[in-house]
Length: 340
Image (cartoon, rainbow, N blue to C red; front, side, top):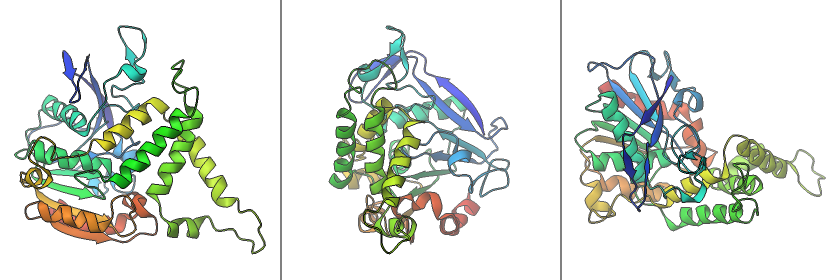
């Protein structure tokens, strides 16, 4: 996929308040230029991924694959607030020549979707044949389907909800507390600030993304005589270091608040009234071991979306199953893709 940068002309105003000049949104597309006769598939990425869906969903996206970049015009836009090319707290504030840090406006899911919709109009796309989003990508896909019901023709919402639950907000707050406990975080002396806090925050997040079954399968000690188990400990520390090497604490902090902002019913008469606006032929998928988006909640949401089809897949790996259970996802999404 090819990377592009969209630059907003003038001030971009955020839902909570505040604005910036020259907002940037990074996005990737299929390598061929877009023409009106192409079928458009738009993928919304999860929290710390980027707009190169071919990179983080390699078994599904690419030439000749399920989401065939040679056959379809595939688009994926990077979230505002991320550090992968879109404007966020680690971007340079032209007024100071330094990163925005905490002067950047807080970002909501609705802000992210407004940015994506600007990219859509910039490309010249008048409708999206299939919109796909998992996790916070699902937040975006649901918000977009409500915001622009005549634009989205088919949608697949995976392991997601239309309003954040207190359980997930608590996880996000614990991660922010980990960041704030690192004294370098609030110092704002460089984008290396908060790295140790970020490592800790990532390990908290990982516990919410996985489940007990997955850890038992992968992190069990081989010896029957072990006194202080280390395998799971080493895994957590490794994942923390790996993440802090590719992400910055300030972007992560801001994106955690965008998670908390998920609420399609805000200002629209409530969740049910908002979801009733959706005109897309909708498919909703849950994962049986998902701790943060449990099937019992997703099935309730699906019932509020007109005509939605509901499916539950199985996984040993909790919420992260949306990245791993490709055969099951293809089995559900295949008929949807064939119909566009």
